[in-house]
Image (cartoon, rainbow, N blue to C red):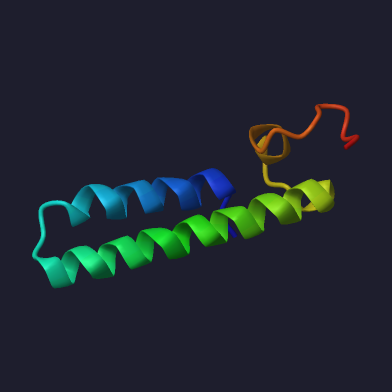
Length: 70
């Protein structure tokens, strides 16, 4: 399992690669980036609802209160 920030990093990498590609490849990479962003949102939501599932430091990275209260 990865942290949401890692999924966002993959999305950014896809977008960076996309702009040097042909139209078809660009579209595919942008779709991949959107999928990585969706995974990040799902993971972020999961961590906010279930802090016990957070990886090292992930709960704080996702903007949750440090005391674990929402």
